[in-house]
Length: 225
Image (cartoon, rainbow, N blue to C red; front, side, top):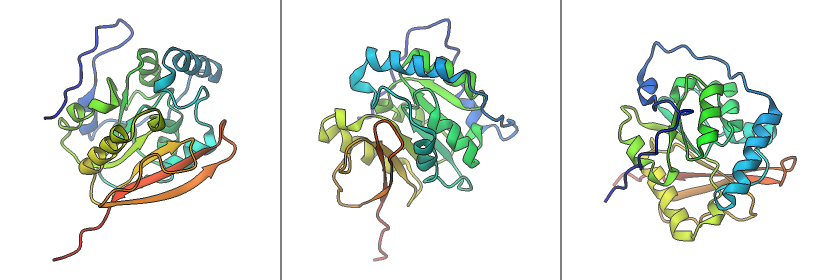
């Protein structure tokens, strides 16, 4: 049975979700104009201290790591790019810098203060307040397939069945061969390879604090019978 995205309590800082923006071809993309980095770092640290299990690091992703993650996404592919746990938007900014149009981005974030910041930084993106583990309620409303899923979730903080379930579900949403991109601070893949999966390491960002590895999962090509 599919889970449903819980309806969050109304908050004056959070406008309604603009999910319809991902279907507006006439929407004009704007280059991200971030608020000051000190503000973003302070918000990130506050979120990490408040919910340490749900934040991969007490530091936002470095620019080099964000670019390495974004490099796994083809900006010319058609469809939606779904980002799970975008935090303060380091990877989101890198995706836009790479050429992914803002109106193609759907960001799911559960921290209210991050959602407010993301909507300020990326006015053309659709930012949804909710849990990444209940993303099916958002995905089923899209009228285009997913071209990529990018995850900043701390998967190693969850049990193996939860990790595998998230990746398996994400792969079921994706265009065949499209990537599920996961950042991890462990040396091994955050989820063991399953039948029908292709797993590869896309590099290590040594300049990040702490050093981080980018992993890419995709569905194995189906052989013609």
